[in-house]
Image (tube, rainbow, N blue to C red; front, side, top):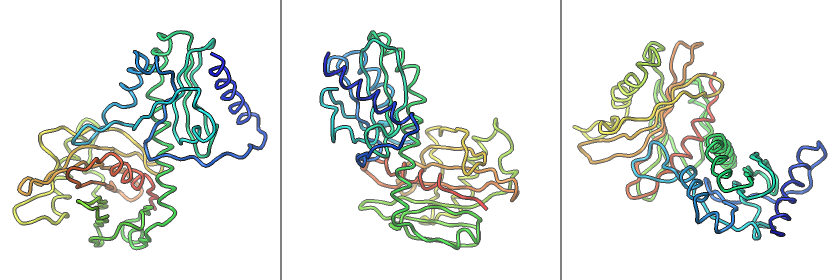
Length: 323
């Protein structure tokens, strides 16, 4: 247990330094692929009910994808190995047995930027209870920090689209790998070509009365997508870009640039061409301009994992600044 005490002492030392108000010591630069989670936990806990609880929550299927992909790509590490460069992963979950009962979020403890979660309990049952209680909040923290990291990477080499602000009153931070595929006074299609397929952003607006209330929002947004998006998106004659009929989308309430938004995740299809893929749609309530601003990201990438492709699109849409 000696190395466990040393690890926990180090955690406490870093956390106390961060909260003391004093200038922080040098922190190594964090590393890791987007949505890569390092799980610091003893082998016997990882291979038992505690590890199963972690996997059930942090490797649960990502909403809105046509095939199951986990929320996070996880890698387990023993606490004794969690030193030096091994502490530089951008996301970490530290789970251990100890004399205290503790669940906390640690920001930039060993590297920068970094978000960690520390869960300590006296028993395995206590660890499981803490994991079950805290996972939603921790996942939100991880997700938001990864959005910021993805946006930071975009800011290194952004695509300049001044006309989007002039015509539709919105700014987006888009990577320079994208290009404008189609534009008009009331519609933008921005696209990045992949080895097999593409990731896409579409932007348009609809009257404020297009979506009337929460209880009807699901059907009204689907109807809007199928009618307007189908009109805007060019497909071969006889085909139409619509919401997949076989699977009901997920609908959430969200916020973009301080404005209320409906967030919908689901699958699009073009039946006659046997094309389909995931989409993420934000209908942003812009009362000042008497409209809903529609921002959508969708992927067409057959036989390719789509979680991180859609995540990049989410980071772009969440960067929106509305006039």
